Image (cartoon, rainbow, N blue to C red):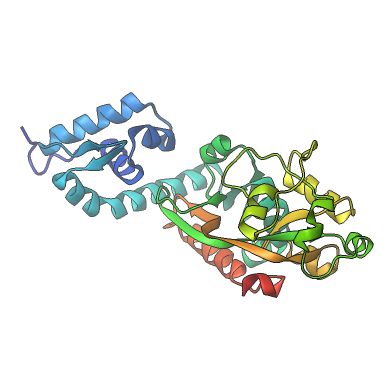
Length: 311
């Protein structure tokens, strides 16, 4: 039997419902909220008892809202986010009066894109303490309670704020000295490709292009088999700058090295639609977070090197 109109359901039940419908999964909602899946289920039952009707149902592998649930979700989603953002701000002030934002990203993006821009970011927001947490493990990265995160892949609608920050464009990079020694022009020659010293990174993540995938998309013959892979991308880029081989490069990550002449970019460039670096935030309504998001988007919108890769 539904409760009286003035008898509001617990806020925790509304938050669990909003997260479950938005993410399409009680398990994902539990992970985001830092509670167990049974606790999410219990909170949903409490809310359904208060409303007097089922609010969610199973559709294949996803949990979706019923007609009543969809109406409720549309009405409360923005309000839930505003309340959470307000509580988040209050907690920050209570525990640390100094404004602080946590940013997390993969090692490659952290060292090649974020850290070079950190001085400008700090200058744009004086008095704000920025904490940068590099993390390559996808599960740990997803579990970080960061204010702003940078991930790689596709938009999936699972975050309250997500934007494709830098679309994926991938090309070869190497040191000018190595390019001269190998007699490389501006464009790689497929016929001579098998003789080139390629640098590999063992990622084990199908979302990232490796040399084999790049060759397939570029119309090149498969790369020769390799026996050594670098454990992280900054190490691999260091080897490329030292002239030890040719690496795959991503648009936007190497502007400084290309402009300084530590690396040269070689055509062709491979593009994958809808893939790239994604900017995400859980509390975009927070004034400071919203301002920093706008700054990061404006920075990413600036022209990248090399120009031909963006055309």
